[in-house]
Figure 1 (cartoon, helix red, strand yellow):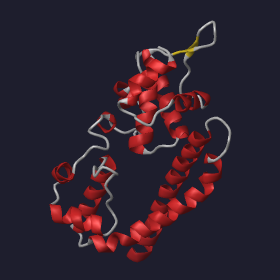
Figure 2 (cartoon, one colour):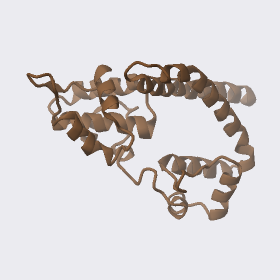
Figure 3 (tube, one colour):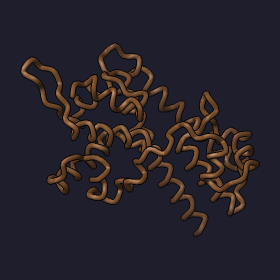
Length: 229
């Protein structure tokens, strides 16, 4: 397939994917399409599935490319006889690879409020409370995505311990501050004139976000140990 044909296949599931993005992923070593004698890229079905793996991991798991690349290398070593590095191969990777079900397409960013309530098992009042406190935000057209399902599920679990939505505002304030810091770092790169500048900036954001989550986790663990002591 040509790069245009691959783009047509992926856009239904990944509306934001572009030819520039695919070229960027190639430059980072995530895919290695063959070249025709005239120099044009020629993608196999395996290349297309590999792209789908990468884009899904970025969208649903917010993983930085270097982590995704490690996963693909592990898959290549452990499942070299498989024809495609798609979701069938996820079970061959290490424990930190998400189960195949996490990579399936379950409506993406088109979850209605009623569907969100049904998926999470909470009542409408709880969703309203999360929205009123700025913790849950619908998209431009009023739909929610899979991240909203995870957020509501986590908030509902905390509510079982007596942690109310108003108590969670501190998490939102902290997240906004971290996002602002990340934006300051990545913005100059995104505005660069070179090819793939925005993709490099997005990748930097993912990496910083992953490190931020790790740091936050360790700080909470440290603080909890002090409380228990």
